[in-house]
Length: 394
Image: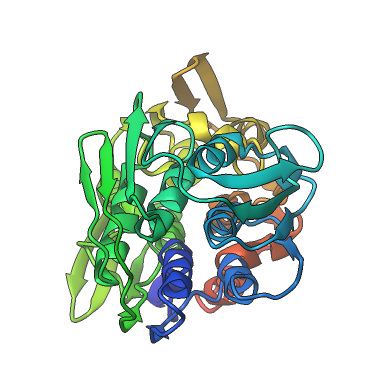
C-alpha cells in the first residue's frame, strides 16, 4: 500500500467535549473541524434540541455527557437509545448527579437507560467519590459541569483509573475554554467559575489512524502518509505509535504528514490497554495475522462497549484460526493464527471498531464484512478511503 490518505476524520472524543463545553459557555465559541462521525453529529443536533425525548441511538459518549448536561442545567429530558444502549449501565453517573442535587428517574431497569432528567434542586455536596476503573466518560461528564456548580466540584477517584488520557483530555479542553481544573493523583479539583467562549480547532482522530497502522503492518509493502496528526496529541490512542513499533510499523512526522513504513515485528508482545482500550481490537487482529503472541491486560471495559468486544473478538478471531484466551479476570493471551483461511465473513455486532479492525485482513485474504455501514459511527468515509488504496472488501 502506497499513498497519502485523504483527510482523516476529526476526533469525536475531542469534538463531543468541545460541544458540551461550548453549550455551557453560551454557544459563543467558534468550533472548527468538528468530526463528521455520527456520534458527534448526534451531539451537535441534540445538545441544543428543544425536543422532550432525546434519542442518542448507539452513542455512549453522547448519552453520558448529555445526561450530566441536562441534569445540571435543569432541563427536563427523556434520554433513550438503541436496544444495546439500554444494556449499557449508567448508574454510577446518575448516582453521582443525584448526590449533587439532580432529580433523575429510570423508566425501565434500575441503573440503565432510558431515564429522565427532571431538574436540579441546588447543589447538596461539593465532593463526589466515584470509581475510576469503569468508564472515564462518567468522570469527564461530571468534570465538564463542575464549573457551573456554586460550590465547585472535587472528584475523588477510587481504585485503579482507566483511560486516564481521556480525563486529561477533558481537563485540557476545559482549560482552553477558561476553566481551571486540577487533576493530581486520584483527585480532580474544579472551582466554581465561568467558561469563556474561545476559538477551537479539533485535531484528527488517532483511533481512525490506528487502522492505517494495521494496513501498514499487514500489507506486503507499505508507504502511507496520514495528515493532521500531532505526536503530542491529547488523545490516548496516539499510543498506537509505540505499540505498532513492535508489530512492524515505524512512524515519522515529516512536512505535516505522519509517514508509516514497514519494519520487522517481534514474535511476542505485551501491552496494557487500560488507557487506550479502543486500540485493543486492532492490535489483536494484527497479532493474530502476523503470528505474534500477545499478552494483554486492561481489557475489562471492553465488555460494556457497543458490544461485548471480548466475546466478539473471540468469536471472529476463531474464523482465522486464532483465539483470545482469558487467563483470569485481568489477563488475556492472544494465540496467533498459523494458517489464514482463503476467505472469511466477519460479523460486526453493530460495532464500528469490529468492522475496521478486521478490514485490514483484506491485504492477506478475501474478507467479507457484515453490515459495513456501522463505520458511520466514527469514520464515515472509511470504505472510500481504503478503496482509494486499491483495497476492496465485500
